Length: 417
Image 1 (cartoon, one colour):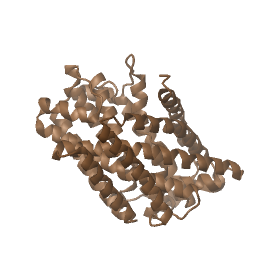
Image 2 (tube, rainbow, N blue to C red; image 1 turned 120 degrees about the vertical axis):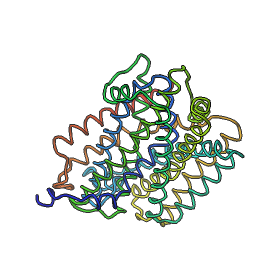
Image 3 (cartoon, rainbow, N blue to C red; image 1 turned 90 degrees about the horizontal axis):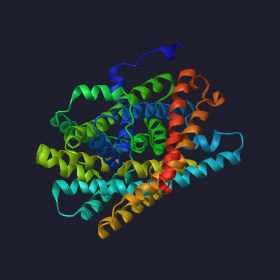
């Protein structure tokens, strides 16, 4: 109990920050930018509370995933494959589902990540969005090919700082009604017709592949025991809160500038265009910079998370330099690049690929969330690190919400919503 009650000093926490910021780098992508922008433009500040709930749910689920990894020495996908059930057939089926859903879903999401980053960079530098698409994909590929977790973590951390700076600058420039912001951050309210976007706001933050990415990242850091779990909790709380802060900033900016004028948007690129006459060209450039950083970070984390999950589900080495690990990276990266090239070459929207990825997530999210909650209660493996009553209540709320979200995403993909 003495170890459990021990404290960790701030210097240690700040020095250790990383995996939580990688989670933020992953979930604040072009999809998040688009969803929060359109929500703020259409409903003003009213749906800020949905992001507050999303941050809470993400912290709860990510903490469980990372705690399982620290307690057992196994990342989530490996734990599912080897220890979820005493029946090996169930474990193999669960692992196969992870491989299929994460592999296919992340390849589809990668299309949106690369195109979003390219649109942001093209807004700033001009030339050709298709050119920037390839440049971004090549940079992300080189970064991941190094096989160095430390290099990837530092790169993503730097981009998260840039992204946050860009979105926060625009938020303060928009001069929002801070009283309304404070009220709606904690006051649940769903205007007529807004349920779909409420669930979309939750879905763009609570991302299933992040559960696999986070559990792998904490093991890369070498965190162990209660001290490691305490560091992990601070890291996750700080990192995910910052991701929520950036999402709030985007919605607040749209609510303060576009909503009063009745301007609605369909994409993050529209947001940058609409901001220019309202706040000036520099504000549009900052937003485009944030969009680029959001797309770039997600373009790195989607293949990384996919490779981790597939590699561990198949029982292959946990090594970023392993030939199969690199194979999964390249398959996801170039699937996104191929579809992204088609998007810009034909003038089509990447929305079809994104909707398909959301449908895959709709199937995967509730299944993984329930498996996660079940796994976190397996005392024979986690021992003193097993979920307590409070964690189970909080986790139950998050998992039930994930189930509702998953059903909604499937229905939307089938055209039934």
